Amino acid sequence: SAVISQKPSRDICQRGTSLTIQCQVDSQVTMMFWYRQQPGQSLTLIATANQGSEATYESGFVIDKFPISRPNLTFSTLTVSNMSPEDSSIYLCSVAPPPLFGPGTRLLVL
Amino acid sequence: RKEVEQDPGPFNVPEGATVAFNCTYSNSASQSFFWYRQDCRKEPKLLMSVYSSGNEDGRFTAQLNRASQYISLLIRDSKLSDSATYLCVVRTGNQFYFGTGTSLTVIP
Image (cartoon, rainbow over all chains, first blue to last red; front, side):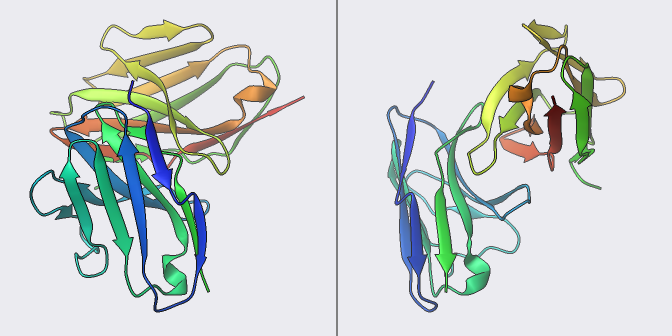
Protein backbone atom coordinates (compact mmCIF):
# COMPACT_ATOMS: atom_id res chain seq x y z
CA SER A 1 0.00 0.00 0.00
CA ALA A 2 1.02 3.60 -0.53
CA VAL A 3 3.34 5.31 1.92
CA ILE A 4 2.40 8.90 2.67
CA SER A 5 4.62 11.52 4.23
CA GLN A 6 3.67 14.98 5.38
CA LYS A 7 5.66 17.97 6.42
CA PRO A 8 5.91 19.78 8.65
CA SER A 9 4.85 17.29 11.29
CA ARG A 10 3.97 20.15 13.62
CA ASP A 11 4.17 23.91 13.78
CA ILE A 12 3.30 26.81 16.02
CA CYS A 13 2.25 29.89 14.08
CA GLN A 14 1.18 33.44 14.76
CA ARG A 15 -2.31 34.56 13.82
CA GLY A 16 -2.54 36.24 10.46
CA THR A 17 0.24 34.17 8.92
CA SER A 18 -0.05 31.27 6.48
CA LEU A 19 1.32 27.73 6.54
CA THR A 20 1.76 25.36 3.64
CA ILE A 21 1.59 21.63 4.36
CA GLN A 22 3.12 19.20 1.90
CA CYS A 23 1.94 15.67 1.19
CA GLN A 24 4.13 13.22 -0.72
CA VAL A 25 3.05 9.74 -1.80
CA ASP A 26 5.47 7.04 -2.90
CA SER A 27 3.25 5.94 -5.79
CA GLN A 28 0.82 7.52 -8.20
CA VAL A 29 -2.68 7.78 -6.76
CA THR A 30 -5.90 8.98 -8.29
CA MET A 31 -7.80 10.10 -5.22
CA MET A 32 -6.24 12.47 -2.72
CA PHE A 33 -7.99 14.32 0.07
CA TRP A 34 -7.28 16.79 2.86
CA TYR A 35 -8.94 16.39 6.25
CA ARG A 36 -8.95 18.27 9.51
CA GLN A 37 -9.36 16.69 12.91
CA GLN A 38 -9.79 18.75 16.06
CA PRO A 39 -9.03 17.22 19.47
CA GLY A 40 -11.59 14.61 20.43
CA GLN A 41 -13.48 15.05 17.18
CA SER A 42 -13.89 12.97 14.07
CA LEU A 43 -12.41 13.73 10.69
CA THR A 44 -13.79 16.59 8.63
CA LEU A 45 -13.16 16.57 4.90
CA ILE A 46 -11.78 19.89 3.69
CA ALA A 47 -11.46 19.15 -0.01
CA THR A 48 -10.62 16.67 -2.73
CA ALA A 49 -7.34 17.52 -4.41
CA ASN A 50 -7.74 17.09 -8.16
CA GLN A 51 -4.71 16.64 -10.34
CA GLY A 52 -4.51 19.34 -12.98
CA SER A 53 -7.63 21.20 -11.91
CA GLU A 54 -9.06 23.14 -9.01
CA ALA A 55 -9.78 21.30 -5.79
CA THR A 56 -13.35 20.43 -4.83
CA TYR A 57 -14.20 21.99 -1.48
CA GLU A 58 -16.71 20.81 1.08
CA SER A 59 -19.30 23.06 2.59
CA GLY A 60 -17.71 25.50 4.99
CA PHE A 61 -14.30 25.48 3.31
CA VAL A 62 -13.23 27.94 0.63
CA ILE A 63 -10.31 28.22 -1.72
CA ASP A 64 -9.18 31.60 -0.43
CA LYS A 65 -8.73 30.18 3.05
CA PHE A 66 -7.44 26.71 2.10
CA PRO A 67 -5.76 26.86 -1.32
CA ILE A 68 -4.71 23.44 -2.56
CA SER A 69 -2.30 22.46 -5.26
CA ARG A 70 -1.89 19.08 -6.91
CA PRO A 71 0.65 19.32 -9.69
CA ASN A 72 0.95 15.56 -10.22
CA LEU A 73 -0.33 12.20 -8.98
CA THR A 74 2.14 11.91 -6.08
CA PHE A 75 2.16 15.35 -4.46
CA SER A 76 -0.22 17.93 -3.02
CA THR A 77 -0.06 20.97 -0.80
CA LEU A 78 -2.63 22.55 1.49
CA THR A 79 -2.16 26.13 2.63
CA VAL A 80 -3.92 27.43 5.71
CA SER A 81 -4.15 31.16 5.08
CA ASN A 82 -4.56 34.12 7.42
CA MET A 83 -4.61 31.78 10.38
CA SER A 84 -6.58 32.28 13.57
CA PRO A 85 -6.57 30.19 16.76
CA GLU A 86 -9.68 28.37 15.45
CA ASP A 87 -7.46 26.82 12.77
CA SER A 88 -5.50 24.94 15.43
CA SER A 89 -6.01 21.32 14.48
CA ILE A 90 -4.44 18.24 12.96
CA TYR A 91 -4.40 18.33 9.17
CA LEU A 92 -4.27 14.98 7.41
CA CYS A 93 -3.52 14.07 3.83
CA SER A 94 -5.26 10.95 2.56
CA VAL A 95 -5.19 8.79 -0.56
CA ALA A 96 -7.76 6.21 -1.58
CA PRO A 97 -9.12 3.69 -2.09
CA PRO A 98 -9.22 2.58 0.64
CA PRO A 99 -8.43 5.72 2.61
CA LEU A 100 -4.84 5.74 3.84
CA PHE A 101 -3.55 8.65 5.87
CA GLY A 102 -0.35 10.54 6.27
CA PRO A 103 0.96 11.04 9.81
CA GLY A 104 -0.68 14.44 10.06
CA THR A 105 0.46 17.99 10.69
CA ARG A 106 -0.27 19.35 14.15
CA LEU A 107 -0.89 23.06 13.93
CA LEU A 108 -1.18 25.46 16.84
CA VAL A 109 -2.07 29.07 16.11
CA LEU A 110 -1.38 31.60 18.82
CA ARG B 1 -29.60 12.54 8.07
CA LYS B 2 -25.95 11.68 8.47
CA GLU B 3 -24.36 9.34 5.96
CA VAL B 4 -22.86 7.24 8.75
CA GLU B 5 -23.96 6.94 12.37
CA GLN B 6 -21.79 5.36 15.02
CA ASP B 7 -22.25 5.00 18.77
CA PRO B 8 -19.44 7.10 20.32
CA GLY B 9 -19.28 4.96 23.46
CA PRO B 10 -17.12 4.94 25.46
CA PHE B 11 -16.87 1.20 25.90
CA ASN B 12 -14.91 0.11 28.96
CA VAL B 13 -14.42 -3.65 29.03
CA PRO B 14 -12.22 -6.06 31.02
CA GLU B 15 -9.43 -7.96 29.39
CA GLY B 16 -10.70 -11.07 27.68
CA ALA B 17 -14.15 -9.69 27.03
CA THR B 18 -15.92 -9.68 23.69
CA VAL B 19 -17.08 -6.30 22.43
CA ALA B 20 -19.05 -5.30 19.35
CA PHE B 21 -19.40 -2.00 17.53
CA ASN B 22 -22.03 -1.11 14.98
CA CYS B 23 -22.40 1.56 12.35
CA THR B 24 -25.44 2.33 10.26
CA TYR B 25 -25.32 4.00 6.87
CA SER B 26 -28.05 5.86 5.04
CA ASN B 27 -27.31 5.30 1.35
CA SER B 28 -28.26 1.90 -0.02
CA ALA B 29 -25.95 2.52 -2.99
CA SER B 30 -22.84 2.54 -0.77
CA GLN B 31 -20.41 0.07 -2.18
CA SER B 32 -17.45 -0.39 0.16
CA PHE B 33 -17.06 -0.54 3.89
CA PHE B 34 -14.10 -0.40 6.23
CA TRP B 35 -13.07 -0.34 9.87
CA TYR B 36 -10.20 1.85 11.07
CA ARG B 37 -8.36 2.10 14.33
CA GLN B 38 -7.06 5.43 15.63
CA ASP B 39 -4.72 5.67 18.58
CA CYS B 40 -4.42 8.87 20.56
CA ARG B 41 -2.55 11.57 18.63
CA LYS B 42 -2.04 9.27 15.64
CA GLU B 43 -3.61 9.04 12.21
CA PRO B 44 -6.39 6.48 11.51
CA LYS B 45 -5.09 3.15 10.25
CA LEU B 46 -7.00 0.62 8.19
CA LEU B 47 -7.99 -2.33 10.36
CA MET B 48 -9.99 -4.32 7.85
CA SER B 49 -12.32 -4.08 4.91
CA VAL B 50 -15.83 -5.44 5.32
CA TYR B 51 -17.12 -7.92 2.77
CA SER B 52 -20.66 -9.04 2.13
CA SER B 53 -19.91 -12.56 3.28
CA GLY B 54 -18.29 -11.32 6.48
CA ASN B 55 -14.60 -11.64 7.18
CA GLU B 56 -12.34 -12.51 10.03
CA ASP B 57 -8.79 -11.54 10.92
CA GLY B 58 -7.63 -13.24 14.08
CA ARG B 59 -9.72 -11.92 16.96
CA PHE B 60 -11.52 -9.43 14.73
CA THR B 61 -14.67 -10.19 12.75
CA ALA B 62 -16.39 -7.72 10.45
CA GLN B 63 -19.87 -8.14 9.04
CA LEU B 64 -22.08 -6.29 6.62
CA ASN B 65 -25.86 -6.36 6.61
CA ARG B 66 -27.03 -4.66 3.42
CA ALA B 67 -30.73 -5.21 4.14
CA SER B 68 -30.52 -3.30 7.41
CA GLN B 69 -27.67 -1.06 6.22
CA TYR B 70 -25.23 -1.61 9.02
CA ILE B 71 -21.73 -2.92 9.54
CA SER B 72 -20.31 -4.41 12.67
CA LEU B 73 -16.95 -5.14 14.21
CA LEU B 74 -16.55 -7.85 16.83
CA ILE B 75 -13.42 -8.08 18.95
CA ARG B 76 -12.94 -11.31 20.89
CA ASP B 77 -10.60 -11.86 23.83
CA SER B 78 -9.89 -8.14 24.21
CA LYS B 79 -6.31 -7.12 24.92
CA LEU B 80 -5.08 -3.98 26.64
CA SER B 81 -3.50 -3.03 23.31
CA ASP B 82 -6.95 -2.95 21.68
CA SER B 83 -7.69 0.30 23.52
CA ALA B 84 -8.24 2.89 20.80
CA THR B 85 -10.96 4.64 18.85
CA TYR B 86 -12.58 2.56 16.12
CA LEU B 87 -13.99 4.33 13.06
CA CYS B 88 -16.30 2.93 10.44
CA VAL B 89 -15.97 4.22 6.90
CA VAL B 90 -18.44 3.91 4.05
CA ARG B 91 -17.67 4.58 0.42
CA THR B 92 -20.45 5.94 -1.77
CA GLY B 93 -19.30 6.75 -5.27
CA ASN B 94 -16.01 8.59 -4.88
CA GLN B 95 -16.83 9.91 -1.44
CA PHE B 96 -15.72 8.35 1.84
CA TYR B 97 -17.87 8.97 4.90
CA PHE B 98 -16.47 8.53 8.38
CA GLY B 99 -18.29 7.65 11.56
CA THR B 100 -17.53 9.73 14.60
CA GLY B 101 -15.60 6.85 16.17
CA THR B 102 -16.21 4.57 19.14
CA SER B 103 -13.81 4.77 22.04
CA LEU B 104 -12.72 1.45 23.55
CA THR B 105 -10.77 1.06 26.77
CA VAL B 106 -9.74 -2.42 27.82
CA ILE B 107 -9.23 -2.59 31.56
CA PRO B 108 -6.76 -4.96 33.26
